[in-house]
Image 1 (cartoon, each protein chain N blue to C red):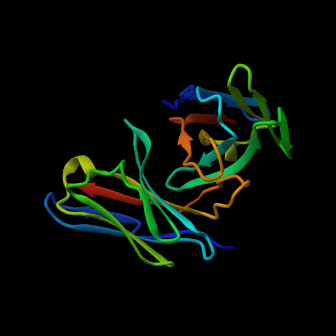
Image 2: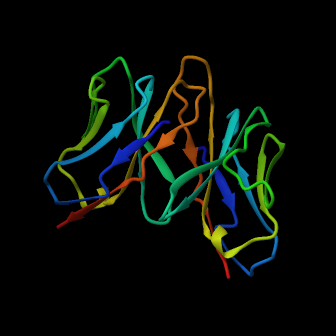
Length: 116
Length: 111
C-alpha cells in the first residue's frame, strides 16, 4: 500500500533554530505539495513541484522558508530561523497529475512543529 | 478569488445519516472532492465528483452536486463512531490546478 511518508513526525525546537522537514512522495507521482495547517488559518498551500521543478511558492514566507526537491524520492521544507508563529502541522502531499484526470492528492501523516 | 465554505461542526447519533454541506464560488470548478482527517493524521481522499455529474454514490457515501447553486454535499448513511473526524471539501479548476480547501467540518458521532 503506497503512502507518502514524512519525517520527523514531531519536532520541538527553540526560536531561531533551523528546522528541516522531509517527505518521500509516492513512487511515480509527478507532483509534490507542501501545506501548513493551523486552527486559525486552516490548510494553506505553501509550495508545490511538478517533475521536481518548483511551480509556485507564493504561499511561503520567502525570507525564512525554502522548499527543494533534490531527487524524485525526496522533498524538503526548511525554516531558518524558526519563529513561534511557525508552529503548525506541516503536510506533504503527492499526486499523479495528468491531462484530463482529477488532480487527486495523497497526504502524508504530517510533521507537528512546535517552536518555543 | 476562489472560496470554499463549510459549516464548522455537526453532531449526530450513531446510526443516523449525516449531511455535510459545502459551497464554492468558482463556477469553473471542474472537480470537487471530499477528504477526511482523523486526529493526528493526514487528509484521506474519500471521493470526488466531476462537475458534469450531479450525484455519485460509493457504499455509505453519497455526493450531491448542485452546480447552479455551487453547492456540494456529502451524505454518510448509518453513521458510525469511527466516522468522527474533520471533513474537508475542496475544488479545482482542472486536474492540473491546485486544490482550494474549505476550513473543514468536524463531525462528532455519539453512541
